[in-house]
Image (tube, rainbow, N blue to C red):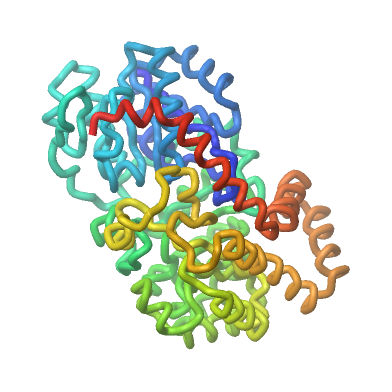
Amino acid sequence: MRVAFVKAPVGGIIGLEMITMVEPLGMECVAGGLELDGHECQIVDCRLDGLEAGLEKVVRFAPQVVGLQCNFTTERYRMLRLAKLVRAALPDATIVLGGHDCSRDPRWFHHPLIDVVVIGDGEEVMPPLVAALEQQGDLSRVPGLMLGGDGAPRFTGHAPARRDIDELPMPARHLVDEYADEYYINFRRPLALLETARGCPFKCNFCSVWKFHESTFREKSAPRVVAELEQVRAPNVFVTDDIFWINIKRARELADALADSGTVKHYTIQTRSDIICKFPQIIEQWKRCGPMTIFLGLEKIDDAGLSSVNKSNTAANNDEAIRILQDLDVGYTPNFIVDPSWDREDFDKLKRWIDRTGAYNSGFSVLTPLPGTDLWDDVKDDVVTEDWELFDIAHTVLPTRLPIDEFYRQYAGLWRHTLDVRYQIQGRMRVYAGLLLALASGAVTFTALRKGMRLGLSKLSDPESFLRAHRESEARLREAADLVGARVA
């Protein structure tokens, strides 16, 4: 069968999608398995093609199955709009929806436009689903699905048991060759994604990763990771593991294998401060594999705050990890959760922490209850909007203690403060000289640099950027009303 995977366009307001544009690795992984079964696959990225040109590609391909994706809650409305256009252009195609968000909250997606929702790992569910479609079999016998229709949603049972991820097919990266040079994170472009593990053993209340993976944690072997990396042409690699280096024995084996392979990339990884404190030598070992930027979800600056999000870590570890990374001259980006219940004193405390530590690369996310998290279950009755575009961790969807315009003045002030601290520590001329050097060396592209500077200087540090999205929310909800009203559930 011919299977087209189509990524919906971006939403256009401030949020993660303005900072990142990464390849649809999940689609590539599923397509890799389908191609092994003899199916013909296509990936169309409407974020880069645009909606009209992307749909033209899909129609020319004439697929029998169209796979859409809703990984992030922000994608809900735009995914439904895309499904409506696909249905009009390809009325006989089966529309299948997969992704993290719809797996965690499948009933929201019970909609006449969606024939099937995949719940769980697509590599496990999609091959038997496509085989059943090809043979005109009974889809109710394929586990891991929510079937559509005009009545109540029908669930086909739990997806197959999660297998050793070394056994999963290689991602079909060739299907995004035409887009590969356009993917980025911050200033780093082009960029590829690399998965070396799935799941997380921790249970932060704002996160649904551990729930999606049902508290499992699975790792790929070093040879498998090296083999995947050999597919990657991009000089920059973002490791998608939620917590890298959690298995220190494998972390050492993987570093040795990558160093021996001769492959050198700039790696962006995510890990925890307590791992860095306990095993600082792993950073030195990984420096042999190439330069690094380490993303640290510190979340809060004190133990009471960490306890409030069930982080299972300490503020002392956070401070010590920053010192270790500074001593080792490794790039790092701490991230903090800004609570809508904060007052001015809470914002000032975070600024003083940045002053004390010199962590001028810090980033800030607004506490956002996402469907499928413990936090959502606790506060969903307090959520003030169903404009899913605002669930981008850069806008509040909960009531604020401060007047909302003052909340965003304080929030934008955090971003401005980090820039001021950078200038104080490095000097304005040195900051710009470093950016020019990175540009000249090819470490970043001019397009990525210009976009990153514009975002940091004129968007994140301007409270009006955030307030505008709230003012436009009513218009977005009206535009989505016909699609949302058609939901069956």
